[in-house]
Image (cartoon, one colour):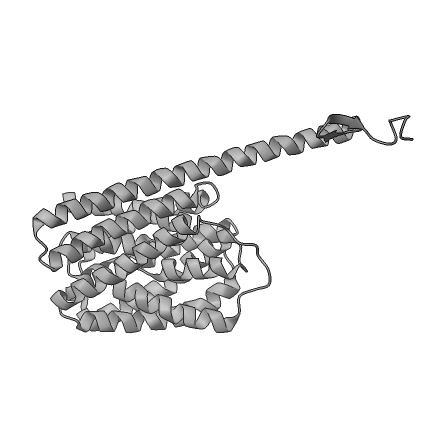
Length: 325
């Protein structure tokens, strides 16, 4: 029972991050399950079955708030489901010992990519022009769906970051569309795991615990997408994924404990430093916005008074300055 409660909390936290960022539910949940000793295929299967419910709840919440571009959802969903089914059958056929380093490496790479997106790129949001081409969305769905099943996550990191970088979709609609289309991807991946593992190979208790935790916070996560700083949440999620999967790979490689501990401590310190930097960066952006807003208000007041501000101070315009008239 204690394990199920912990997984419920994990599902809630993962959904809070995913619903706000459009990524990291599967990666975060699978990472923690694998770290707890669950076989990679069973962990990914449990997460995908849980995602059928969490993505449905998330999609409904995003739709109600106007965060969904249904054209993107229609084009992405089917190739995503096909890729997820293929990835699930491949992962199911791999022995657990062979799958652990493969999945760990994929998750580590995705974690690093999430960090890159929200640290190196600063979480910048592009301008929005035109619309995303079908020729871009179809292969994106296939790649994202395949990685999603192989790594227990990847639909969000691949899909959200790719759509954001395209500069053609509003961020909140990127998050809402990726979360909504993931319902179909989760169904495709779950069917693949049923074919590859059979019902007996899936821990339904784990899936139910993750599902309940995720469904409970899905509406809150959809609301927070407009309010929480994505840079801070993205850095926190990416760091957790990197540290946890680094531990998994180090243990798999039989690295001496005398080396594992210093490496993990160093990674954890870097993770904390990244979060601190992200918080400070958000504060700088907020303070700069407040200053610019105040300056704009002063300019408006000057315009009402018939004055403008120059290096020498306020000056009357031509209509109110007799000397210039």
